[in-house]
Image (tube, rainbow, N blue to C red; front, side, top):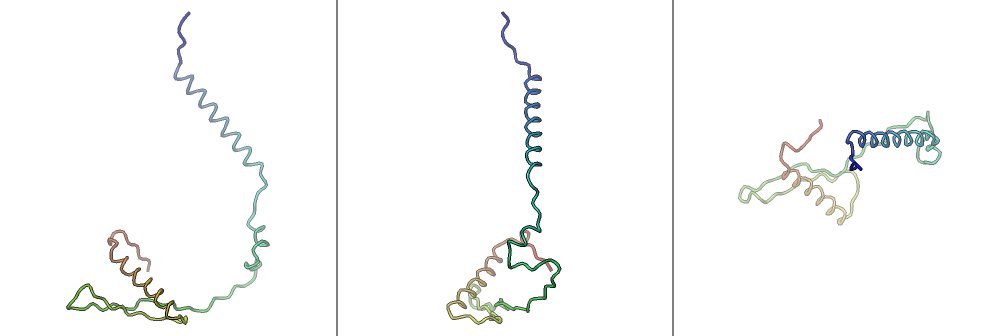
Length: 121
């Protein structure tokens, strides 16, 4: 009796048939589902206006932002940050948190190489 030999072409042919059959089954199963439309979600989101309703422009808001930096000539690593407080009233704790966040953003931008930064005008 001759030993069993496996032909590579027949093995790949069987695998190709199985993959093709599975792909066809997946396409059929996914096309049977009920289609979902974006209009059906409007009723589920009460904060969204009805279609055709005019949406007015929101009022302008100016948050706290970094205006400038003072570098001391006698100590180049000592900075004074000039921050515009913006329109929103903040308590002392909130000011400290917000201003620290702005300073950390600025210092983080100094550590990123210029080639890795993106600025949109």
